[in-house]
Image (cartoon, rainbow, N blue to C red):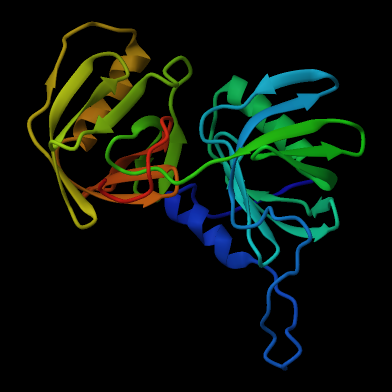
Amino acid sequence: MRSQLSIPATILALFALAACGTQTDSGDGSGSGTVTTDLPVTGVHWSVESVTVDGKKTAAPAGAHVEITDKGRAQGNYGCNHFGADVKIDGDTITVSPAEMTEMSCGKKIQSFEEALSAALSGKLKAKLADGGLTLTTEKGDAIALTEEKPAALVGTKWSVTSLLSGDTARSLPAGTENKAHLTFAKDGTVGGSLGCNRFSSTAEISGDTITFGRIAATRKLCPGPEMTVERELMEVLSGKVTYDLSHRSLSLTAADGKGLAATATTAAPAGKSG
């Protein structure tokens, strides 16, 4: 059974998982070292494409991914919640120990996928690399299909909003509002996209690790209650100065009052912070 992380589901909590890796002794008495692996799968951001269980294939939600460090640790996102687990690689076999995961509330469809992925990504898995893809197959024949993804740039990437932040906690978007809100920063200093209901545009001054948004111009379409609720919260975040954190294909924007958003890259772009 998976153990549960007691820490809040924040972006920082995701990165903290990376620091929990196991090590093998280097033999010099220092207790430090790295895990020797037989497959070139470590240090790669593997995006989950699908999970096949009992012959039924299910596409993964945006943001589901796995990274295996050379310290013997797997970390990533099941589709909503972050996870971390110890791993061992022996030949073409990857053994994944019971995982720790955050406890963010997710929609039923995503929760169902998370359960399937977390169950498949456990125990002994046979790994096969082909054409930039990785397939992990369980002992009973279930399979996880993954593809290698490069880092995304802040500018020029379409960022799909996946959750809302408040202080040290995060929550998934209400059912029915997923995959609707997104934003893209342009090289000319503008930003635009969808608030989940209405289209919007504004200016965005990027400096260091902060972004200062100008006045937002938006359409005035009326939408169902949950969409308008998400839209109002996003409007608050995209007003004034925020701090941003970019990690591979994940982006968080946090205002001074602790409110913010987390987003995942849905359009590939060259690596870099500001493009």
